[in-house]
Length: 333
Image 1 (cartoon, helix red, strand yellow):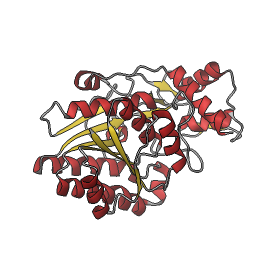
Image 2 (cartoon, rainbow, N blue to C red):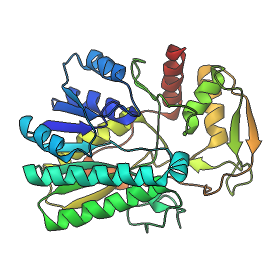
Image 3 (tube, rainbow, N blue to C red):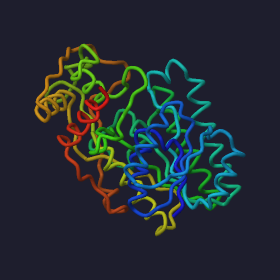
């Protein structure tokens, strides 16, 4: 298939492109490079041994997207392009709504004009809020989200669902849990702009001496060791879920399908730090701080639907994910 990947130079996008090419798909990349670097694309080409066309543009340029879809005979779109920092979204809500919602509307309009009718959307477990029960299934109620980033994901899911009902668009909404790790080659990985927003880059940067200490936000949660529990999935496993979703779209008549992408296992912050130290034989200085507003005690997926519909499940262990993350970090120094 000919696949357009928006935000293809980002953390998840770049790993997904490697898996798409390995599966025999032809890829075209769109990225504005606001949160990414063109150097990533050079390393993706090294990994795939392929020349991958890319266009530097903003997805809010509908006319440009129409031309790209037509000129490249695109069959399906994987939409990653979005601003993604929870804390920043609280400080800059207008920027997040303008970028994430306008970008999606522009893409959907372009797809409608060109009759491009398959979409995989990068959603998030944030749509579930503080869950009523664990593990979280796709039937769990969606709850009001306390930050603009998560709200854009909820709104996007609703917009896509409405468009699918009104047109021949088919969509898989992939609700990610917590992507971590890096490609085993060390050529691509997570490169935060400024202070990391996610736990593992903070762990690796602290271990490398880039940051003095890591703060664990709360040790009084209702969990076995008092630290918050999340579902950490290797980014390569996550990338492969997108390849499986393309195959699923070619074999289903469903309009919109929401699927959790996680391991199905909850891991606490302190467990992750201990596993990182053990796997890499390195210490991570940390302190205990107060809980962050809006945080929740536990969040992890039921991944049964992904296995049933996509034939997909995670293969890479937490330990290996943390080894890959550390390998990536060391190569940045």
